[in-house]
Length: 252
Image (tube, rainbow, N blue to C red; front, side, top):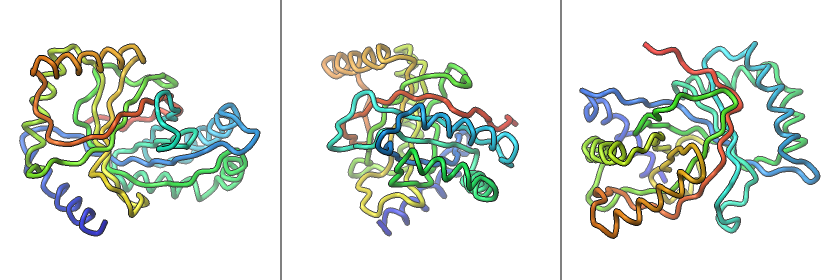
């Protein structure tokens, strides 16, 4: 894991050179994996989140948006949590700032959260936007997110991302894909047994759209028209993604 963290540091130092002439969005992400306490359900969770959101309106000193991911297609033997909380800000510093702001005055909300959930992991992660979604985010909106664990193939490195991303974005444009694509790089709090380089996430407007994308993938593989992939990824999982807070950084 120490070697992976060293490579991660080198990787992001290199982004400034690799994407010198292009705009790339790199931001901070917080991930909390949770199960429900016995006798509790997602309605109980959302009641606490509503209080947290109100607290954030008055106390968060930086933009912070969040989504709840609940599983649609996944194996409980691999991923047994009931839901995942994902929070985003424009930097890891501001992810930390939101945590500071919460700890400063939201102890009672935290106690309520612990009564309805059992969260076994919490981590900071680096969010790299590979492809911006064409549809704007909507407060309270529902989308669907596929997630895969990926590692770069032998002989491939961060220097291959730029050209390969451009090739894939052209391919996705031609296929009419309107969703976004992100790489989530593990950081502080991630398991020391992490055996992948990053998570690859993609957004879809419906489960049907996701299924159509898988149909197109199979057809392209059979025709040999699918672009080169510079990573190996495991089987995707699909989650329902519900926005619970939308406070995006101002552009510019």
